[in-house]
Image (spheres, rainbow, N blue to C red):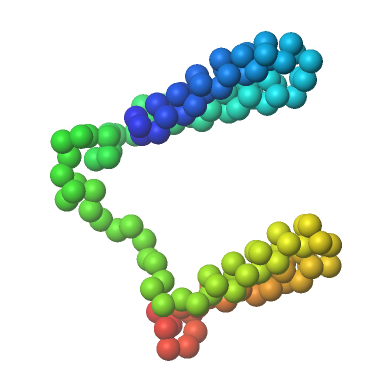
Length: 133
């Protein structure tokens, strides 16, 4: 997790001077920009602290060792469905939901119903039929 917390430390350290410079350039007349940039710095710092604190408690990962071999990271990564069609209707339902936010709530509700059906179908795909596990 060394790379991750260093990345977020850089993000946090980047947004502090940018927020201050933005405030100086606009003469602090526009208060939302500097506050948003400083809050982004705080968010990066909080995530960096969490990852740092978690990395201290866990043993070193193979990803943190530059001399590690690929075989050290092998193992079970999970099950991924190779022939599933359910992500396609789920993505279409998500696009309907986002379009519904711009057009009207009636379209959002239709997309949410289709999304619930697609999510249930994708979740229980391997519980019934020829693909039952």
